[in-house]
Image (cartoon, rainbow, N blue to C red):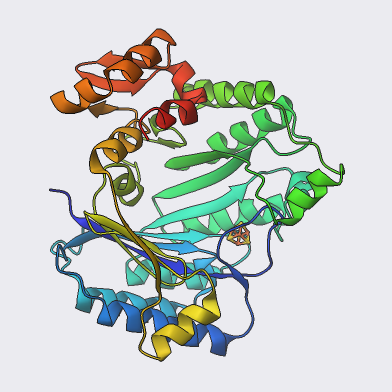
Length: 369
Ligand code: SF4
């Protein structure tokens, strides 16, 4: 059985991006961040995990975890090392999400010394006009400089995040983004299609007619272009949105698609213990207050339907998913229809998305929910 992973949510950012609906707060002062780190370490210390406590991945997500000082990162990692069994300390994957212009070379070197060995770097786009639209708080040059700094600090496993489908983005803009990302030669690239969430400033701009979302046809063209360019550049697509050079797939994120346990800590952090999925409250003050008063920050818990989830999560992976005989019988009608629609295919007794299925993956997943 695969080992578990630990996820840590760091909910602070320098400013708020126009499309963001994550649980984040604008960075206020060092004291309140320190108080949050105290709450986080306290939650890890007191967590009751009985099913499995050996881990081989740790993931700092956010927010912008690279706003943490090395001392704060060290305190969190120390607590994880006390609470969990890390049988192979040299092999553990420790990822930190980072944003351009949030770190110095010295800080990056300190993170490396503490064991952080993978950077998930939020570039999103190299186009300054689009960075302004997204209110990212940095320009393309900041991204280029921070990437160089990561390499200078000996990060040899870097993932770049890009977002496609921005209002006003053309296929030429997207081509230039892909070309520049590939030319930087990261080990991993994650690509997302922009989602416009209710309640965000971007949703308001769309509603008022100031921005127009791209149409489905252009989105599909962007996705197809990305598949071709990345394959031609030596990146293997191992999941719908994720591409890696050989040996550089994200071990942590793969746990979500293979239903391995991941224990989440911090505000809005989600966990899966092998049987149940549960999550903490989404409000940072409520989370800290709950921990400080000795109550549980948990706001949600459910049993999962393992059979159905292992199919639609497994279908996200390039290798697809092997069906049990029972599952095959239960979903025969859906499977036959999806094959007839050229959305899935059987390869070596596993079902996999076809290229067309990757474009309409939500329709495929819905068949198994
Ligand atoms: S950096 Fe990420 S988490 Fe922070 S506001 Fe922007 S999109 Fe949200």
